[in-house]
Amino acid sequence: MFSLDPTPASGVSMVYEYVSKNWCQSSGGSGQTAWAADTDTGILDEYLIELDTLWRVLNRMGMAYAEEKEEAEQQIELALAGDGGAPKLSLNSSTGTHLIDANNVPDTGIGS
Picture 1 (cartoon, rainbow, N blue to C red):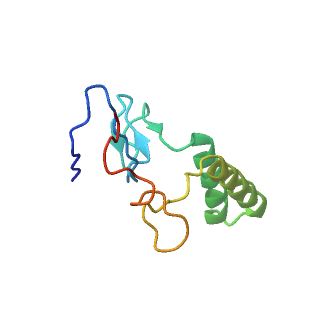
Picture 2 (cartoon, one colour):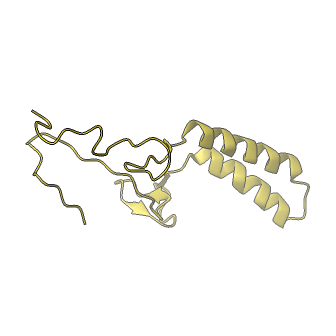
């Protein structure tokens, strides 16, 4: 539940991120937890899915897979490094820098 007080002016956007269990999507863009048709696409990078699937198939078949696994793990690490989110910042930390507190927010005139 979100509660905003006062109600934002028209045209103001509020954005938040979340984690989903849907890792693929239908051709229409609806999130899915499993492939259902040939026209489905991955939300995750399909190249990374391919690399990770390859070494797992080789492993199941009893074949050498160490090089493929290493390549997959390296590519996944590179993708994660480039897609990292910002660190969590406490608005009123008990230690360290206070981003918002009584010392740096005026009592009146906010947003005017």
